[in-house]
Every structure is written in C-alpha cells, then in structure tokens.
Length: 60
Image (cartoon, rainbow, N blue to C red; front, top):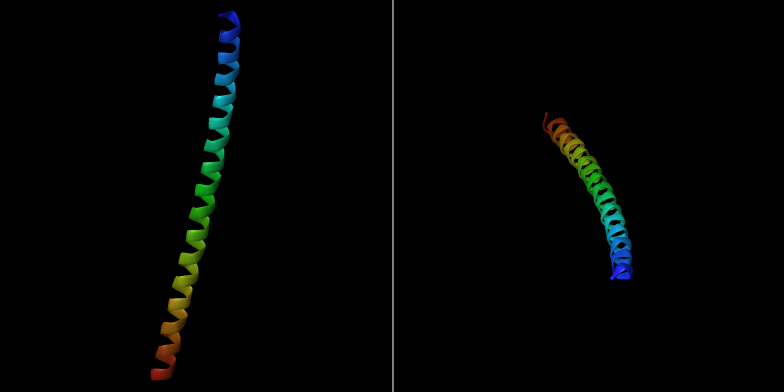
C-alpha cells in the first residue's frame, strides 16, 4: 500500500505537469490565432479601402 501511494503521487505530479504544459500551449495557440485574425482583418480592410479609392478614381 505504501508503494502504491508513492506511485500515485508521482502520477498525480506528472499529470499536473502535463495539464499545465497543455494549458500553456493552448494559450499560445489562442494568442497566435487572434494575432493572425487581426492581421487578416487589417489586410482585408486596407484592401477594401484601396479598391474603393480605385473605383472612385476611375469614376470621377
């Protein structure tokens, strides 16, 4: 029984470490996705504005 308790504690510690590592990586992925979506939004907005300016330039 004493031995089982020690292995159980080791497994709990390794599980906790694994969960913390997974949480850290998921947070990094979330931040990267937000950054990429912000960049894409900026590109789309700038592209849309330039198309509108080109259209207005051709019309006027």
